[in-house]
Image 1 (tube, rainbow, N blue to C red):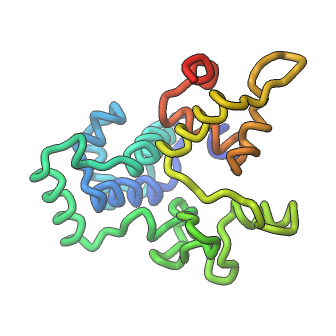
Image 2: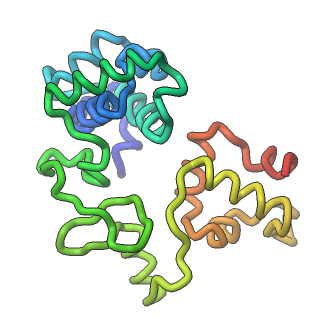
Length: 216
């Protein structure tokens, strides 16, 4: 069982939510914008960001996680007034809050300290790795499974990934001959990622794979 199998009203440690909200502020996202995007209470999110709450409803933690995954890849200047972005960043700097890169994949770990993670040693990878490993989980799994990282594609941001998907679907789509549908695993493999990672990218971009194929 994982945390996603638990009910919405289950109380979880608030540290991950607090770190995500602070990282969004460091990036320049105003709390009102985050609250509106999440459909959550602005006052409650500010209390979480200040670290005044030790636990949070899983429902709220999920909302914050989803909004964080969506906004952290965007440029706040494209959605907010410059003065608001600057104010948010100044507030974060004054409080000494840490950016998303300080936590990498340890953002929900209460024992983790900022910057204990280092950038994955694989060229151009944007993910973090523990000091003793120097490879992120994605590259460790690839190395364990295949014994080599040769030919592995660089990690891309969401926009570039969607563009790559569109190109593959328009030029040489991997089709399952039995169902005549897109072979999801083969598509993910050609992109150099797992189907789960690809699915999450599509969800964040609010794109349906079938419709994407039609428009390719």
